[in-house]
Image (cartoon, rainbow, N blue to C red; front, top):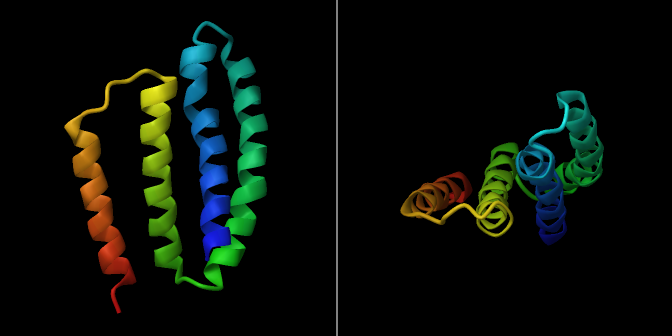
Length: 110
């Protein structure tokens, strides 16, 4: 299961950069250029996401796998947003994280 979570973490780093880094780096670039760069990053995301899902599904239900991915996405996005995009960290991130903790609790509850 830790292998799947590690792969999901790596995949989400690529995904977050593919989706949002162009807002900072290539704001004035033509849209087609940004799309091509994002597709290139998304390729690497899928190189980690697909194996993560295959490995994870052997140890978790589909819903557990999805919630795990969403929690990782929130954590990666919070770090990316604060350190890379220089967005202020606010209490809404904490509230969202608490909601995700609740989701994890209920989805993993027997």
